[in-house]
Length: 234
Image (cartoon, rainbow, N blue to C red):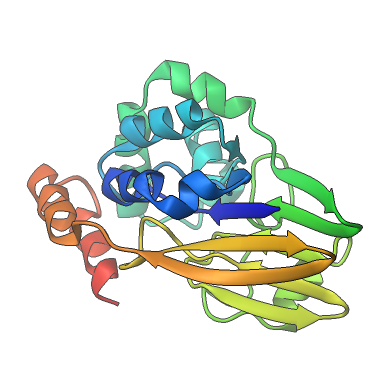
């Protein structure tokens, strides 16, 4: 079985279009999106339409939750004014139809393949509306990250949210962060192959017209557009 996993598109339609054209995408038996279709880049409706229309497993991310329900009070107090302005701007762009569809998304997906247990999620959820604090601050995960998933009955835990691709084996579990498809250059995704009880993880990248994307972000000049456009240079 071959599974393609991607996460954190964040409104970048160009990265998503390139992924959907790739041989990896079309040759996969199962495709799973780990959430955060929304925010940062200027094409939330376009990305939401593509992902919903794809038939891929679509799991909720924290930004998808913000889009569906608005910022939860627990998060609001930690968001600086410009970040709140950005969330409001992007949420107002999203069609009400998609806001309703987002409410129906699941937060996790279990799969048993050849007796190997997999769990797919955006990140560790501590409530219906809130992704827990990231103890690594988007850096390479350690035992602190593994502790967040200690109650998940799975051999492999596949997640996004951090934007940085990584792998960690801890306490008998393998934690795989696929990285971000939309907010890194080149974009990240993973191919997981399970054959005869053997699991193979391939870290893959995809290119897109990043200069065009950055130019369009700056032309729209929405809150935080300048700052987010610089993320592609990191």
